[in-house]
Length: 384
Image (cartoon, rainbow, N blue to C red; front, side):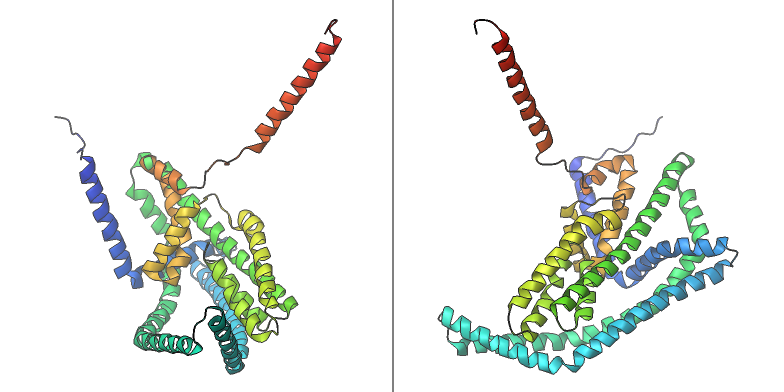
């Protein structure tokens, strides 16, 4: 009696897929306080693995090598935090003045809107007061959740280094476990997936850091040349938001434009800021991302946007930052498993060019040359 694989009808497979999909998202949402620190720790551990391996090859003990790598990371984070804190302190000192100027700007906008749309200014003021009251009530209700989130964030801040240390320390055991789970005929395939996944994550994260530094420098330089206040802080915030694909770039330009409207005598500076950020986005999209950030995995823009929004719905801002590297890992795994290769192809960016101009031009030139040759032959014939 031979064993036969159980064949399920299409509707049964669809039901099981939907149930599993919903269950997966429910688990990811409910257990986010456990899953998110582990994912962050895995990504950072993969990023630090070459540094630890270098220290080990130099003859340093594995435990000491991991400690040195973690200390270097913390020194970078502390330096960046100190710079950010100094810039925020300067902004907080002049915050009341900015609020007063912004209030004057809003009153001018209300006066213009009431005259242009024939609406009484009193109604606009009432609507603003009502909206502000609703926001205050909402913020008051969300204050408790914010405190809880800050507490969980501090716990995460202490847990992630522990996770990183343990993952790097037990890395050989984890790799051997992954290889032993699969049968012998899949050993080469599993080794290739593990190696390429590590390479993709390393290239992505290193490229992301380099992109952040370059965009922060470009943003800050542009704002300094335009004479915008708090240029360094706004440049860093813009570079941080730019890490979020397709969405952060639009958000990053809003804050410096508002500061330009409040602090400058003419609104033209807001347009100058918009133009400068647009030029920086062109550099980022056409040079920095393809040359520095891009890895072997190219993600479809449609699915990238969907995953970013889904990550925000699941885990908030953290999910938006984690969505693209996780999708890259999923696509890489799909590309190496035969039944899942169509899904990997769907997630990829393999769209052919919509208009192939070069072959058309070649064909037109060839037709012109043929016509000229026919004309020359006709002239050479007698009686033509």
